[in-house]
Structures are given as structure tokens and as C-alpha cells.
Amino acid sequence: MKMVILSITMFTVLMAFMAADIRTIFAQEKGDPSEKAVAVQGKSTPAQGGKTILIAFFSHSGNTRVIADMICEMTGGDTFEIKAVRPYPKEYDAVVEQAKRELESNLRPPLAEKLKNAEAYDVIFVGYPNWWGTMPMAVFTFLSENGFAGKTIVPFCTHEGSELGASVRDIEKLCPKSTVMEGLAVYGDEVKNARGAAAEWLNRLGISKR
Image 1 (tube, rainbow, N blue to C red):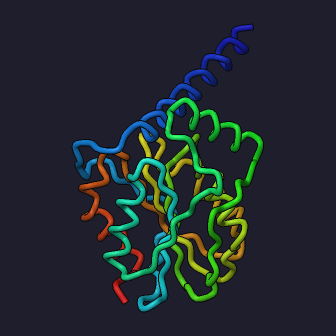
Image 2: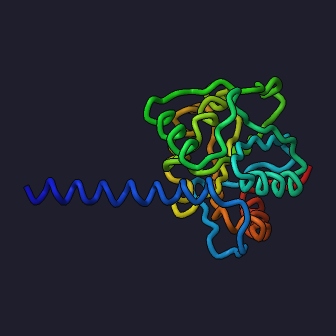
């Protein structure tokens, strides 16, 4: 009986932490930036310079877009915004519930626009907010549709405590024939001051402006 109560308590604490993370990401747009909470995860083997680069990103509040724009400026890559056909609601409760339902049912929402020239790129940055410990399901759709076999995928995310969560593992499952590199995770309210950390991260990866 004590073990059951302990398990329930641990599960409740975990869910509360994840809910707090997603709540802050949905609600925040601006904050007092600092670089104190930038984390990296994954492989650190440098990529070759001079590759063609795409920065694909999903951004609900605008935080992930800020990082995507930084990467675009630093690499000279092209950008592609991942959007669902049916936009996610702006209201906190509604979008949290929708994100949870989609994850639990493994739903792949159709995208408003498809990437038509995936074969033209060697390196694909994939950006997203951390929702319920991984990527929004619209990003799952994007990766499932393209696969990126033989390509290099570089993840980056905004979060409020869960960093990249299980997203790197999920990317590797969705794109088993691609190489997934070291990812960057930035607190949602600290994106404006993440330029230095992003530059160091790109330098470690060996990715420079073409």
C-alpha cells in the first residue's frame, strides 16, 4: 500500500512539473534575458562547413522564432516555418489540452505548407518549444513527412525547465537514417540574450555562414 501511495505521489509531482513547464512556455513572450540557462544535449561531432542549411521551426509564442532568426543570421541558411492547417489556440487552457490530446493519441496534424525541396539541404535545424516533454505534434508531422535520410538534423528548443526532454530521442526514432547532432535548449524568457551561447554551439558543430 505504501509503495502504491509513493508511486502515485511521484507521478503527480512529475505531471505538475511538466504542466508548469508547458504553462510558462505558452504564457510567456518576453522576459529579462540572461545566458545562465542555456543547455546542450546530444552528439558533438563537428559537421562539415559549407553545407546547404535549412532552419525549420515551430513557434507558438514567438520565442522559438527568435532563436531561429539568430541561427539564420549566423549561418545564412534558409528558413521554413512549420504551421498546422488548423492553428493552435492562443488561450492557455485550450492549447495545453490540445497539445496533451495530440501527444497521447499520437496524432499527426496536417501542415499548412509542405517542404518542397528537402533534397536541396544537407543540414536541417529543427526548432520547437518543449511541450509535454517533447516536440509539438506538428513537428512530428514535419519530420515524418520528410524523413531526411542521409541528412544532418540539429535540434534546438525553448523550454521552462525540461530542456530538450525526450525530443532528441523522438527525432532519432522519426528519422533513423539521418544524423542527429548536439541540440541547444534555451529558457523561454531568456532567448533575447542567447546569441553568445548559440554562436558557441554552432562553432562546436563546425557550422559557419556559407
